[in-house]
Image 1 (cartoon, protein in one colour):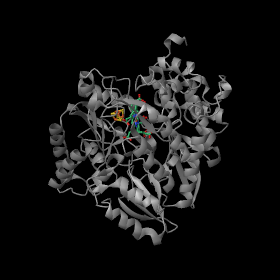
Image 2 (image 1 turned 90 degrees about the horizontal axis):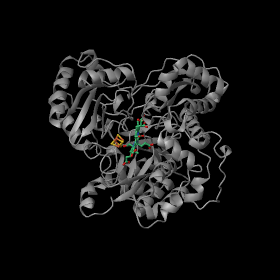
Image 3 (image 1 turned 45 degrees about the horizontal axis):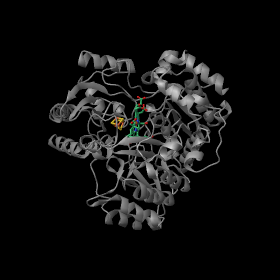
Image 4 (image 1 turned 30 degrees about the vertical axis):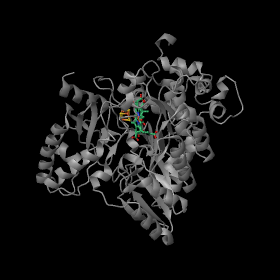
Length: 570
Ligand code: SRM
Ligand code: SF4
C-alpha cells in the first residue's frame, strides 16, 4: 500500500518516535492553551484529549480570542475497581486541576474535564501516584478493559477481573514516552520496532475494545466490544470463555458504509488460552485492519472483509490454539443491577448507586462528590465503576452497612429513582465533546422525566426500559443496543431508534430521522399505548416493537444501513 493512500493519522503515528511527537515542548509553550495539531492525535494515546468549551465558542470568537482550550483526561482502570484511597486521589485531582467533578464513563473509568494545559503534567503525575494511570485510555490501542461490575459470586468475579487486568497489562504500549513526558522518566530515544513489540510504530488502525461478561449479567455490553469474553460457568468455576468479535457502535450520519454491529461468536477458549487469544485477535486486526480510511478501520469492518472463517483461522494460528464450538449462554440484561443493596455469596454488602449520566458532583440536594468523599475517607467501601455510568460501593462488611446507608441518606444519594431512569445512559456531549451535534448528558434528566410521565399515563410506571441518548452517531452510550435510542442530528433534533434487546444482543432499528422532542414523545406515546394494551406477560418494550411490527428487526450492520436508506431515501 503506498503511503499516499494511508490515512494522515498513520503518518503522524509513524513520525512520532513512539508517541512522543512534540508533546513535551507543547506543554511549556505559553503562547497558546493548545498543543500542535499532530500532537492532538498523539496525546490521546496518553489518555488525554484536547477540547474547548463549546458554550464559550461564539463569545471567544467575538472577542477575537482563541477557543477556551482545555483537556479531558481519562484513566485506565481495568474492571473499574478502585480503592478508597484512589477515589480520594481522583476527588482531589478533580478539585485541584479539573472542573471539580468526576465523570464515570461507559467503559468503567473516570474522566476529568476542564484541565488546562499548564496543569496537565501535575494532574497526570498525581493520577500515577495513586497507582492508576491514563496510558492507552484513548488512541489506536487496546482501551480500558471492562469486566462485570458487581461481584455477587466472588470467586468467579475474581477470575474474570484477573483476566481483565491481565489483558490490559499484556496489551499496553511499551514506549517510554509516557513516563518520559509526564513522570520525568528516563529519556529513551530508541526508535526501533523492539520498543513496541506488539504494536510497532504505527500501533493499531483504530481503537480496540475488550469486555468480559459474567453471565447472567451483560452489564459490559459484551456484544458492543471488538473482542468480548463470556465466562462459561460450571460448578462454581470459570471453565472457559465464549469469544465474540466484531462489535462496534460508531456510525456517520449519511454514510451508509458505516454501521453498528453486534459481535459474533468466534469460538470457545479455555481460561489458560484467553490471553493468547486476545493478543492474536489484536494483532490480526493490526495487520488486516484498513489503514486508509479511519471510518472503515475498526475490527467490525475487517471481519466483513476477511470473513469469519478466515479470521478465525488466522487467530488460531497466531494464538496456537484451536477454538472449540461456542456454548449457548443466556443473559438477564445489559443494565446494572437494581439501585440499592445486594449481598454476595460471602456475605459482603454492595450498594448500587444511581449516578445521573455518570456525573459525580454536588448538585442541589444530591451531594455526590462530598458524600462519596466521606465514604472513602472512612474506608467503608471499595469503589467499582460500572459500564453503565453508575457506581457500586462494594465489599462492605455487615458492621459498616448502617454507616454507609446513613452517609448516603445524609448526602441525598439514596432517593429511589424509576427503573427507566436507572437504566438510562447519556454520553457526555456538549459542551466538551467536539463531535456533539445535540445535547445528551445535560438533556437526559428532563427527557427521562417526560418518559416517566408517558409511562405513568399508560399505566406503565415502574416498567424497565433501556433508553440511551447520544449527541452524535459515534455511539458512546452504545445507543444502537438500546430499546429506545435518541442520537443527535442537530441542536434539538434527534434520530429515533427502537427495538434493541434488553440483554444487549440485538441492534436497534432506525425509526425516524431528524425529529424534535415533541415528535419523539408523540411517537413514543403511540408505541407505549400499544405496548400497554397488547404486551405479553414480562415482554420487554424492545421485543414488543418488533413483534408488533412497529419496526422490522435488523440482524446485521449492512441491514441497519438498508433500514436507514428506506427511512431517509439516501
Ligand atoms: Fe466515545 C469519541 C466520550 C465510550 C465510540 N468519545 C469520543 C470523544 C473522545 C470525542 C472526540 O473524539 O473528540 C468523546 C469525549 C467526550 C467528552 O467531552 O468527554 C467520547 N466515549 C466517550 C465516553 C466518555 C462517553 C460517556 O459518556 O461515558 C466514553 C468513554 C469510554 C472510556 O472510558 O474509554 C465513551 N465511545 C464509547 C463507546 C462505548 C464503549 O466503548 O463501550 C463507544 C461505542 C463503541 C465503539 O467504540 O464502537 C464510543 N467515541 C466513539 C467513537 C466512534 C468510534 C467508531 O469506531 O466509530 C468516537 C469518534 C472517533 O473515534 O472518531 C468517540
Ligand atoms: Fe461526543 Fe458523540 Fe461520543 Fe456523545 S456520542 S460523547 S456527542 S462523540
